[in-house]
Image (cartoon, rainbow, N blue to C red; front, top):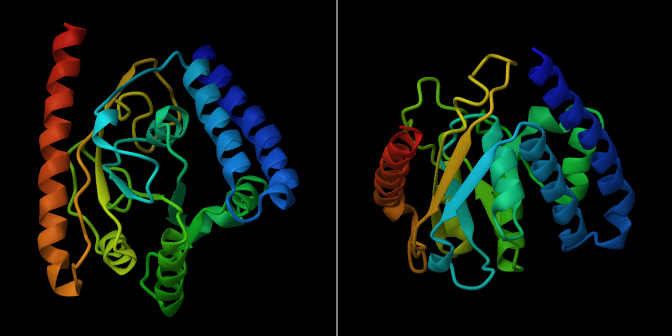
Length: 244
């Protein structure tokens, strides 16, 4: 209980301070958002430090340069966001459900950082948001998407939704498969109790979308799902062996 209170206190205070800083700094880099990304990355590092979470990243050599890319990761738990923010050495924007953007300070900071609001209902606004995101990617911005749509309820990788693949095909940039394991045990879904632990991240080679059309979307979804499941299984087994 003491650990849980301390961790959420650190996350909350750091989020309020750094979120406010993002809002204040927005006029300094309204287009690139580079400064705000570094601030958000610091928030991720604080969350990892407060809960003594170790993060191991493999496969960085598979991603040449800074992109732009569409990063796609499975979603195991709430600490996925902190681990990816704090440890991936790339500038990227999250695609997040629109409800989060209405949260005071956090939502405002996300908007100021250039994160992209998506309506899960697939409305006309969703199509507009994806088109705007594709234009930003053309201008050099990378994005990170959880194609499952939400955290896995049982730890297995769920079927992927189409939105992220539509975005990747429209923008014609490579998709980088990212597998993450270990975060589900740190904050179990629908619980607030936090536990220390280790998170493993494995990055695979980018999958090209240049020349792909919407006719290729289903095949692309299957390919990415297979890659992420393969790497998730690999790093999960490694984590179990190291834990023993």
